[in-house]
Image (tube, rainbow over all chains, first blue to last red; front, top):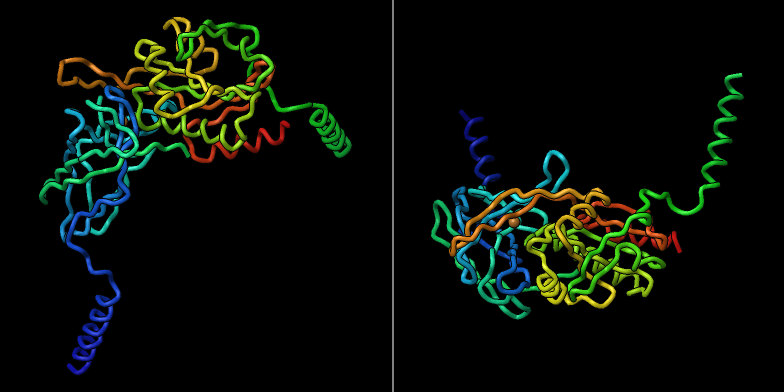
Length: 148
Length: 194
Ligand SMILES: [Cu+2]
């Protein structure tokens, strides 16, 4: 009995200390490092970002829309079995609790198909991300010319 | 006896290896000519027009917003880090000539803010197809999407390559085109050439 109490006590202490060390989750879905690729109207562009699920629930990204085109898709670049590079449309992207999912060049990307206006340096693109649980997230991303 | 044989083999291979001057030739493109056209609609005889220059070339299609810009960015990086040399021609060659007309390629070049020693090439579909065969670049239509005005857009699966030709139009270097380490590898190769 005494022993059980001791363990409980230690357990509470450890738990308490632990929660002090851990970063307190913001409770939000957080998008950072976002940018969209430069391009001309009618060409193709893409957008990239890091998406961190700091909510208390696992969630799923189910679609993305944009103010510059009617067609926005979630794609992933991949290597085919015979060594070619291609892209696959993704129906959804799982967002586990506490994890950052990267949309980055050569991997997951947002396809901005045939934008209706030129996307030049200094412009921005607004994306609306829809999730299966939480409310949608509206973000404004800068347009960048990347050449490094 | 076997011991002597082994030593002999080693000696012969060392001699053979040291006799080989310059980098290994992967392919010789000098005996075929392809009539292509650049982003300014100027006809280009490939590779004849580039004899006497190194050529660094990547293969792209402009409706590709992810992998192909990585290839183009790698070419840009190589050119910049080599110091924009006059004797090295940079080329982006499309395997989608139906859509990548000179004016589309001109827009693409403008968006990437490229200079005179960096051209994009296209051509008649049959010529481009024969050219791509000669450099072992494959491409095929993969997924399609219908736009709001009912038009179909296609995307392609394709080889991912950057190649370097020497001044005699021989392929001497070949790497995956989009990988981030490729510019450094090619720059090192260039340093050992010169
Ligand atoms: Cu894509």
